[in-house]
Length: 19
View 1: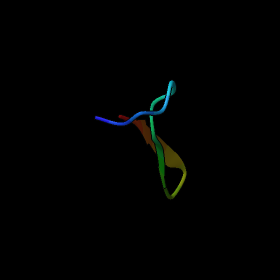
View 2 (view 1 turned 135 degrees about the vertical axis):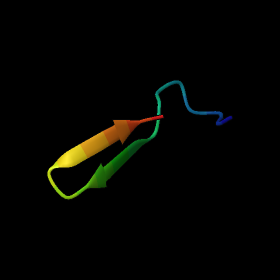
View 3 (view 1 turned 45 degrees about the horizontal axis):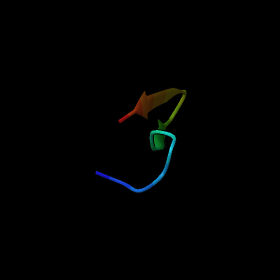
View 4 (view 1 turned 90 degrees about the vertical axis):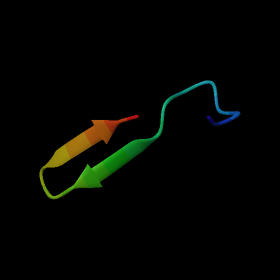
């Protein structure tokens, strides 16, 4: 869990995962 009010964005190539 993070203290950020927004999810972390992980960019992999042309795809991005929001966790």
